Length: 442
Length: 192
Image 1: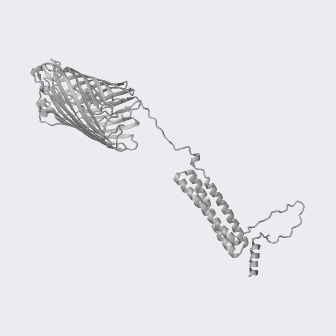
Image 2: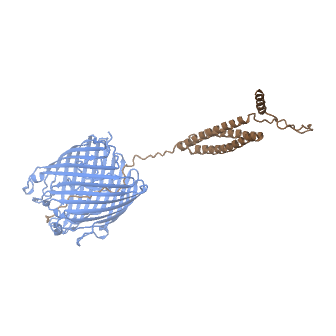
Image 3: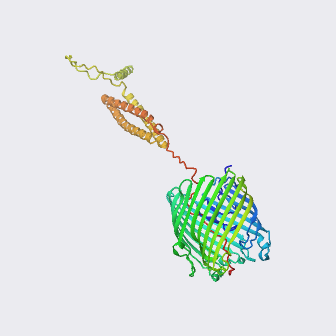
């Protein structure tokens, strides 16, 4: 059996258990940091799939995992532990062949459902009802279309996810479940005149992000629009220098946003750099530029040299066909639910190794320094600085290339400093999750 | 009747005999050191009608050679054999020129036969014979034109070896679409 490294390509992050994020290390073979849980789509380039008609494959998958969560409600004060069970099923219809070759018009449609259950071992704070947090159903769906000739290309994609996360507990009370509906759609056009040395892409992305009313975050229901123009010149076959410009428009759907002071913004980012292979086994992304949140209404916005700078540096090393190491650093700002935005400095590391053709090991970690700007309200805090750590580990044994059994581990640690708050560390938490898992993806 | 037959027979026989030219002048006694002319000049022994018929045969043969060479020319064009095509085309041109000369000679031969001009008739017939031989030689040369198959070592083929260590995906593309979302930070209850 010759297993290829399975690099789950995510179109949108699904925050299944904590803050799992994409690190934009490479265009394809995206790197994921942290424990990702069970897969919800088929990995590419495998000899699997059910031929339902000429040129159409159906991939199906199911998985189950059971484990332990040391801190369900993200609090260091009397954390609640629980046994956790998750089950996932998905189906994916695609016209990509078993060899992975794309046709002139390719499509990929998928749908999946995850069920999660907590089995608490102790009484919940404030005698909260376990039934309010025990069960969660999280559907996902996605569609991608791509067409192109040698010079022109077109792409269309949409992804939907319903995410249900346990709330924060504070002292003797627990909030409501944080239920979130997120839909991201994008449309892009690609143009590569002549021999393909020069490539350009124009992409529009729209995101609708809705929080359930009872979660307490519905004021942040937002509509994000992002227009991106990217032009790259391949001075080597797989190495290019590029310029990239992104202009966003973020506005909020509820009037309550204005009440809490959450303002619309028009984030701009202009960068230039290099991406692609340095050698046959190493690749890099180097990007420097300018960004600005352009928050409206006179609210706090990005400022200063460091606040207006964007930097991304990422290296990928493939010591062999069976392993990959990624290390990177990123400085930018991100839109925030509890403030206007936060300046983020991220360092991440990922190591993936295939062993003996049947075992796959995935280790990853990241550190994010979140400097919140324009806090909306945080127990009297005037400033907030979070040091967030995330570690993930997965060890899978492939009984067949479509059946796996393994172990998973996730660590989420947040060290918050709320300046001016009665308890500056009230947002601290440490969360361990351990899983045993079994699944099939065909 | 018998007398006419004998007369005609005598006439035909007389005309097919390679006769001498005009009675040569008396040979002067050789002087000491002067070379003697021992060459024998021959003339065709065909009758005028036979000459005409033979010339027609020559014309037919030459046209057949021309057709054959044109066939070879078309074949070379189809095979895109430039070298052979140039060679055969050269032969075609020469054959056409010789056929044109032959046609002129045939017309002159007809006139000479009509005028009973033996000298002119012989001259033109000899000319036709030589032209026909030339065309036959050109035809043989066209058959032996060398093409690319003997000098051509094969079509150019470019083999590209790609280092298997190089990833198959294109790392120069921008990141896939998608906006990162993460769990919102803990906050005091806010209006929602």
